[in-house]
Image (cartoon, rainbow, N blue to C red):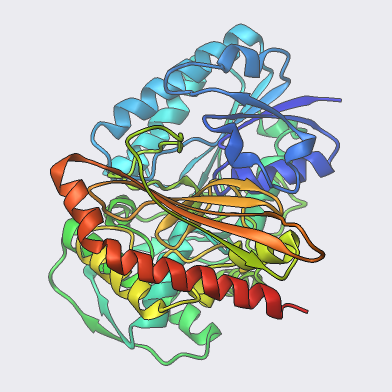
Length: 481
């Protein structure tokens, strides 16, 4: 049995590739910075998880030791300073460790586009491929344009623009630049197929769907699939910075993610040859319209495997695990509920998203709108699934920090705050038949004087809201049949 290493397993593509490799009979390892973020995945028990950081070079030796092949699915989408240097350093670390471990094949997913005049985002994708190849490794580099699938960042931008704008501003590049989008299922087929496809060794393979379009056509076709009538007007003003802020207001995708994608609009991203079809004749790529219909079907069925939001943590909200220490302010309450812990867990683990926040939801929405105005994430991200929640996922303006099935969830605030905040729901059996204790705790670690002023000035309101929230969870749990 071959051993395959997957980097980026918590990301959009990696999280979908791993279960397909397992189904094919491979032994899979995952190299991740935060192993806990794989907990709760249906396939997590079937893989070996190794903690490491490719940028720092940690964990690579252990992860690559004895591996037959490795997937390099690491990429920074955010418009962060010096992201090109970080990507290059990570690629060098990985290539060096893979060469030392004697890995027989590296499979890398990069970006499509001609070499001349590329955006920084696409140039960095190409540069990573060059670094991997320069080590003398056997590298198959796939280059793709927009990946169409439920939860894809590019698809989400198109989807929300078409859904929310009856008349869409049409910038120059939306009319003139061509793109060859590819369905996520076809990307996964190419990635998995390359493991045993010797003809793809040491090649750069451009992959795309069956059709190419202008970006305006992509929006129009999406609207047609949804039965929406959408108009366009020419917009002469073009600035990636301003356009990214506009996209950040209209869609759940923050400007820091949207800007690199919008900068790439100036580049035609279409396949220059049909080599992928020759090398992989068994793969028949979908056309864009069909790919959209499949994505919408997944969304409507609440069957979104992975989402771009898993990889996005706001720059102002660095990951920080909750530790019960002195210096934390908390608002803690316990109530008895005439329901089992399983029923109570089902209620509070299903909070947010389309269900809302059970009590005075309009106030939560107002707080989210204020956060959005201040440059925060707002309430736009929702949740991946209405009932199932995994560690590491976003939930409106929270991040799921910890999940203990049928017992507890801990949410970390990713809204803009003068400090750090957590909200914990926990349940346990109580004395008496079919009775349980619901414990709901809000923790706040203030930053400076303003942090204390923020907490105490809003404490009366918080106390009222949290009391109502606990009561609403109680009522819902007791009404569950």
